[in-house]
Image (cartoon, rainbow, N blue to C red; front, side):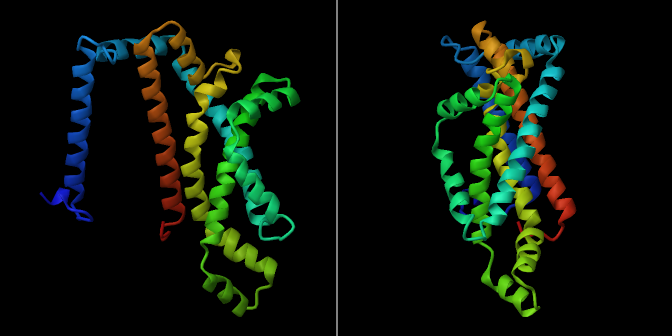
Length: 255
């Protein structure tokens, strides 16, 4: 009964047992609702059948297409966000960084419309829609990270004789690389979540989002659920990879 008490410490094996219990519960609900009169979800056989069809139709190629789009957008967004976040320590750049953070409230439709006017290439439109959204959220998280740096670290750097640019390099840039990786990991989900919407802009480029849209038009719910599971597991793999990378590079990180 300790699992119903707040802040209770339990062993790793017991955590695994609880996780398996929840997975079993979800699988049971899936089977019950898929075979009920309402047919709320496709049956497991329909999902696995849809997954088999997708694999034969080139699912792996579409996964790599989505990963390439995601990687390109994330790289550009990281460069822009880090530049504005680090330069926000300059009073002349700080208002721009804060304004960039506020752009996260803009709707997708409005932004994609103006990007489409500026760019003619469909793939470029996809990339920059993702870049725009991830940049706003990533900048917001990076600015919050900078504000959480204890004043003692700045005072310690000054006591060691560092000038202001050296403080920026040693305390803010070098001293927070592990936090930056963690922030990127958290915000990567935004880009991956928007794949379905963005990849529908250019059907010729393919991708997991295109496959979901195409399956939705055919009312093939088995394929839709299969694709959602693929997107989920690929996203979880990227999350795990970034977490593993941070722990390997910064073994004494407090995050």
